[in-house]
Picture 1 (cartoon, rainbow, N blue to C red):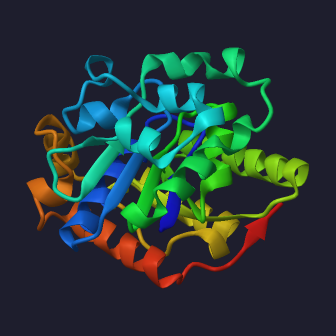
Picture 2: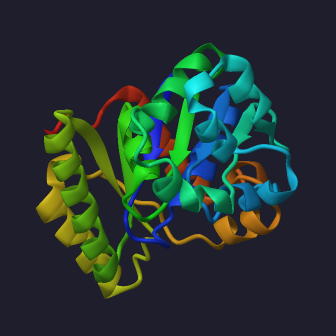
Length: 263
């Protein structure tokens, strides 16, 4: 099972849309996908029409029982979505208390990696949606990943957030003596505006080897798909946004990204 973490310390750059869209494209190709929402806002569940506050269990419960992890426990708290082939381990607001209540306990940074190992045979790909803040949940998401996808909106304020994310990975890499492999993915690109073009040029100059050589365009179908509680691939499969995510999936699957690592 491949594990891809979608992370950025700035909100509103397309993390949840990227998770849902990649999951949809994968499912359309017959792949089994596990989405894990580590953001207490639980946007991924709401995107797909699942209210995590109305279901009996969540990722929070798995963290509470991290010393007794089992395959059955993980499956018990995983819910199917309306899309065949996609399951969700949902978030709840209670996850916001993890740092304070459990963060001091030994091994808390590896809970996600351990639970994914238990269900590795059940899925082809796991996609982890991250909160925009550094804490136990992001540490878990980065530690569990084979590759990190860093969406960045093509505008300069978002690029500042990208800089913080890269610094976070550098600091974590040094402290934990690990190396993170990552790809920067430009999102919400509007070729009609000078701002998008200038931001993309800046990304190319600064992050050249780690920059995906393509863009996710602005596409209203993403918003419409979220209102319909479906991945865009199942709402508007021929849309330009979906075609872009299909290209991104090919890029990730083929390992075409430069193996530039930090840490």
